[in-house]
Each structure stands twice: as structure tokens, then as C-alpha cells.
Amino acid sequence: MQHAPTISVVITTYNRPDALEAVLRACFAQCDKNFEIIIADDGSTANTKDCIERLKALSPVPLQHVWQPDEGFRAALARNRGTLAASGEYIVFLDGDCIPQRDFIAWHRKLARRGYLVSGSRVLLSGELTARILAEKIDLHQMGLGDKLRYRFAGHINKVLQLLLRWPDAGRESRRFTWRRIKSCNLAVWRTDLDKVNGFDESFLGWGHEDSDLVVRLFNAGVMRKDGAFATEVFHLWHREAQRDQESSNKQMVLARAKDGTIRAAKGLA
Image 1 (cartoon, rainbow, N blue to C red):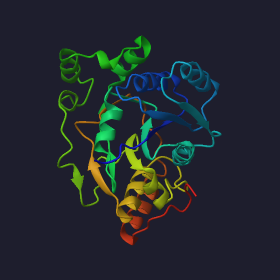
Image 2 (cartoon, rainbow, N blue to C red; image 1 turned 90 degrees about the vertical axis):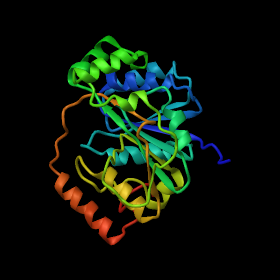
Image 3 (spheres, helix red, strand yellow; image 1 turned 180 degrees about the vertical axis):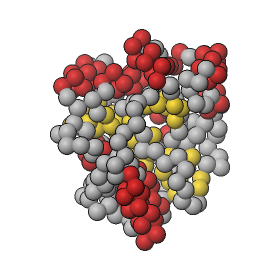
Image 4 (tube, rainbow, N blue to C red; image 1 turned 135 degrees about the vertical axis):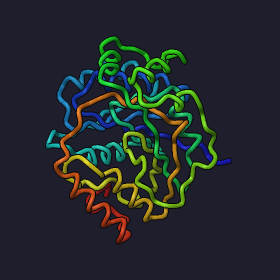
């Protein structure tokens, strides 16, 4: 039997304390509480710090806050700092607007396998439902079948089968690289593999593709992908699209690295 990994959940956030509170409370409610939380803060103001301090007193698991000055979108640096602060051998990256279901940690633990990363899945929420959840502090874990179907038919969530079914750990492995569903908002990677590729590349400027770059370099290093759908779904709260000024150049860098076999980040964990 494979050794059960110690898990660190690295949650990125930036000036959205109401969403972060919903995410943290969902983490506190996990059925598997053998994990720690590191909040990787990309320069939020005091409101977020106050929120974290208040919730830290309620946390049933270790929780720490890693902050960096606000100098633009630097999610890669925030995630690297969160990784360096983590003590777990298995890192689950989660965004501060992605609310996990109660079995989120349990399923990531079940799917963890040496030589693989797990690309998690998400359910997109509408702006209207997001506003209600945050304003009324709705507990999504209390949703029944009728609620889920109603929200789906009304267009407030973009999928429902993934919330109703659980697919066992079989046939999830992929032996080839694919761009499909690469999202660092829900991504699990062994710490030794992150060290091998030097983590996220902090030289990526602006929004876009720093997560694809990580997965490309992991693939170049021999790390395969597992699909976390029908097991690891999170509720992704609605937000406005980020500015994508650098997206095209970032994507070109990823394509070049996929072609030339680059493994280590130019500026990363080390």
C-alpha cells in the first residue's frame, strides 16, 4: 500500500476577503483534516489580513499567511512562496475564489500517485449566484439534488453530473501532454516534482499560462497527468476577467518550451 502523503493546501488570494472566507470555511469543514493551509497572498490590503487572523482562531488545521507587496499580478511568485512555507510532501494549489467540497482533500489524497500530477476540476458559478453566496453566506455543502438541478437549469452553474457522481481512481492517467483543463486554481503536485522543475516561473509577466508552463515542464521532466474530474470539483466563484495584455507572449513561451524540452524555471523556487 502506498504511503499516505502529508498535504499542504496553498491558497492564492488578492483583495477578495469575502471569497477567501468562504473558501477557508469550506476547508475547515473537510472530512479529512490531515492537512495544512498556506495562504499565498499577492499583496492584499489589511482587510484580508484581518479576515485571516479572525478565521485562524477557528481553524481546525495549521494555517499560515504568506504575504508579498502588491507589484502587479505575481501569482507565480506567491505560489512559490507558499510552496517554500509548506511542510507537506504533496502540494494542492487552490485559488481563493474556489470553494472545495467536503471530500476535496480526501479525493486528492486518493488520487495522489508518484510520477503524476492531478489536474483538478471546477464548476463555474454565475455572477448572480456568487453574489448571493457571499452576501448570505450560503453553505454550498448543504445543497440537495433539487438545488443542484435547479441551479443548472437556471444557468447558475455550468455542470451538474460532476456534483452527483464519483468516478473511482481508474483510467484517469494520460501518457501525453494536453492543454485541456490545465488550471492552477485546482492542481496537485508532489513537492519533489516541483523542486525538480524549480516551481512556477516568476519571469512570466501579467496574467496567463504560468500554470500551463509548469505542467509543460513537469511533462518534460517525465511527470504524467491524472484527471481529477468527478472527484475534486470546486465551486469557482464568478469574477471579472483579468487583463490579458501578456497572454499571447506568455503562450508563445510555453509553446517554445514544449518544443525544446525545457524543464527548469528560469526564475523559480531556487
